[in-house]
Amino acid sequence: MFSRDALIQIDSGDDAPVARWLSERLNQHLTDGKTVLWLVSGGSAIDVAVRTLQLLDDFKSKQLHVGLVDERFGDYGHADSNQTQLVAAGFDLNKVVFHPVLGSGSAESDANDYGAELDKLLGRADYSVGLFGIGADGHTAGLLPGSALLLNDSLYGSYRAADYYRLSATPQLIGRLDSAVVYASGQSKWPALRKLFGTETQLPAIELTNAKDLQVFSDVKL
Image (cartoon, rainbow, N blue to C red):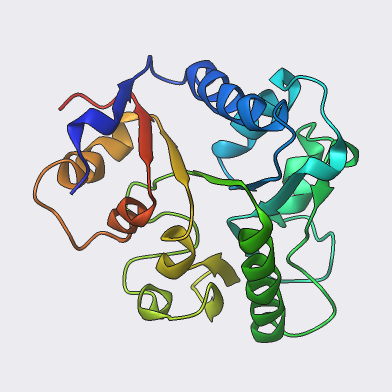
């Protein structure tokens, strides 16, 4: 279960504390000349990612490598892609070394290629952090309840969900992160969060405890 020490209480819809916390950690390593891997999510976490990048001090772009926690398969640049939506929200890819998920292959080959790339990046990074959300059903990244990826032994995988072919980080990848940072705001998410901070061990988001450090920013009332 989630430790209550990991919860940082925020006002509903206020993502500024998340961006400040994350930017401070990133700045700490970047100003020391370290290589950083930062994985970002789609959905409500997009605005956090944009705000965080804006708060970073000047750094050499080659120091900060940015990838995606999860992606929706399709042609490169398709409208529902998390990368497309991240850029549309104002995330400047020119400031970082960005690593896209989508290539020219199938969902399976793109996931396999990305997993191999992340393996190398994690091996080179002095600090790695993932920015995650949690859904009302307790999912995180592309790890929906019942997804076969929950038992996948690779770093990145793909599967057919009800809406898209989803490509996603797996529990194996989460376990290699130095930090996992969660932004989960809104009453629809409170039941799942209460379970995660209680005795629930079956919801997919419980896999976030595999990271070396977990911080959860939420308005949930426990």
